[in-house]
Image 1 (cartoon, rainbow over the protein chains, first blue to last red):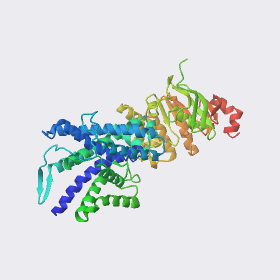
Image 2 (cartoon, chains in turn orange, red):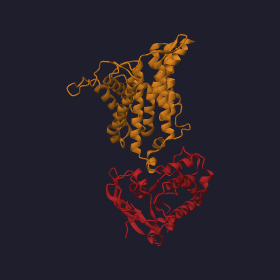
Image 3 (cartoon, each protein chain N blue to C red):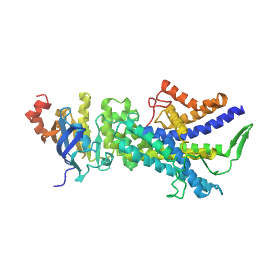
Length: 311
Length: 238
């Protein structure tokens, strides 16, 4: 029983991370019908942005709550700017071209970030060690890990609880933005039909920019949450979570916001239980098994467009 | 004399190597109904899309109330008092009629005014009142067309662009659409009406333009065009 509980806790914890990243995929797909394959790398940049901010603040020596907040919001802001820039420079000029062009460009942007970050630092230009180079870095401890709750053998740490709370708060916030604000109305209208949305006076380009910024900020938050509990960060760290979050988004029904959240959590749980009770080396395989199953059985995903998606 | 509400001056539009519109000029004065008629492929819809910024101009210019607007994006026209009910209606099929019409008022901030307009338009479109909670995808073609017009009116435009409002509708529904257009116009909204149904369109229009292969072939008042032998032969079935 306690083993089951432990897997459950771990699964939900991994799942909320996938969900946060999957939201970026699904929102961008919603407004542009584009799979932004660079999204996993935006997540990686989020981890490094937090790393540099934390070091600049001297978090390692004297961690405080204020600094933790700064690391979070700073990293989210950096990635929001990065997402905005990627859309503006890489995707917008290609918007009228065949969709395949944008898709290939997305892969190009992904490589640019992955390998750009592996270059040796330009120390002559910046005093910071940037780019970080290929060697993994150690993310400083924002606050010490303590056990908050012990049920039998199941240990739930303050980090587990905090990640979960932050992730849930962000998702509730996003849900509010998408379904309760004027911007959300505009975003859903663009998602249904950009041309008609424009005829309603909705500034389509601005909606798309903000959508990229929002999705990228969520990826950054996910990255900081992961880096707090697993502090090894490197320029390729976004590949696997990026792919898995994509699977989660497809599973939930790409373009559907609640679908991405459910998809992420289901995927996290599936991974944990397969690794815990089955063969641990199948942890990564299960995501792709789910992808194949979804594509075969229900290509539109759990909450795909065929069902009543209110846009 | 003050500038006309809409002034289209020698516009050209190209689709790749094909020039679809070869120098169309037309005017719509405040409070006028102007019909744009012509055969399939004459460039009526293209002209309308070019006017509302959905297509880029290869040449020529468009002025709205004297202000050059050719470089604006489609969404910027709404704030300048122009609404476009597009070809194919462009209804949000997954939303209810009421929600569709609220989208039409996207730029407005006067909640009370919006609510009042939503209610007021029910007198123009009684069918929409009966069906207001229904998802638009389940409405009939005529109801969807009514909805497209009602939604366009929600931005309180001075100029309404209508693209083939009678397309695919039963004669009795066409009749009521045209009577709505006349009523809306009497309340001061100018209308640029693209129609395949030349007879009906010229019947309610103050003036009209006949488009032939991307050019204005004839223009005149609605009555003149209806009486013109050339127009009768080509578009009104002799």
